[in-house]
Length: 217
Length: 201
Image (cartoon, rainbow over all chains, first blue to last red; front, side, top):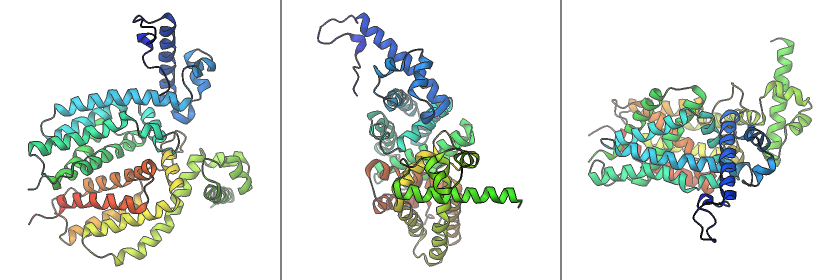
């Protein structure tokens, strides 16, 4: 990424730990723009929200927005990365509280569905962008996106180590199947208005079907 | 059908034909609704009375294209050989091969399906009732032949297959995979599912 992430810790070259007033102001501007962008992406989707709208929502000029972000996809990525990193942590915590692999996976998936249930337009925009050939590249290959997929695979791996699933469980391939099935249920929530309970019930059945072959000796 | 209704239908078909030609020759991103209207010889306004957006037009073009695929499947299905896993593999391989004839268009269609501006009649990505029916029929036949345990939750298996199939196209979008590479991955995944649904000895 092109920005200075450590704006709050001041200029690293000056050796000063206290943030300069300028760095603080810059950070505040960024936070304001991100909050405005999040609101607009949630309401109007990715294509529907323009930089001009976002600037107006944040109460600043488009120039001020461009001083902090290269373009709209840059802004969108920043929001997605932050969300996915937070979500990955919550999903992992939820999974680690599970009793057995099926319960662990279901807890992780439910956490994901609950996270986006209150901001479905943003989830919809994220899916849209991630399939776009150009704009989607950085989102698809981000560490945050990979972490989500990996934490599911990790749960399958733990189950193999515990002896709950067979050694021939094909951890990576099966982890991908679980994660793909998890993602594929989002249209039910986005387009058909499914409840969290309905999503969980569907996910539970899918997890069983996908794990069934690895449970046999 | 009233004259007005049939005129509307004719306009709709002209727009779809023009859009398909333009999408295929110059690409989806590069085509504007204005160009589609010009080629279809209709006003831009009347395009928008029928379709909510360019993405909406693309979704309809892609849905119409499927008639060709299902005609092909109707011919092929009676000749499928092998166990239920192999029959499933063949059915999905035909889909991968079909959709990758126009990979760029298909990926644009997936992205557009998540776009904000779809009309209510547009089907979300991953909700193709004909594919679902073909796969369901194959599974039911598997149960009838004793290849799939009768205790299995068939709808859950169907959901898992459809979901995983839909997201296997990420390999095309993410990694530039072709139909054979996607089929190879999906074939192995069907194998893993099959270990779970084969009747217990």
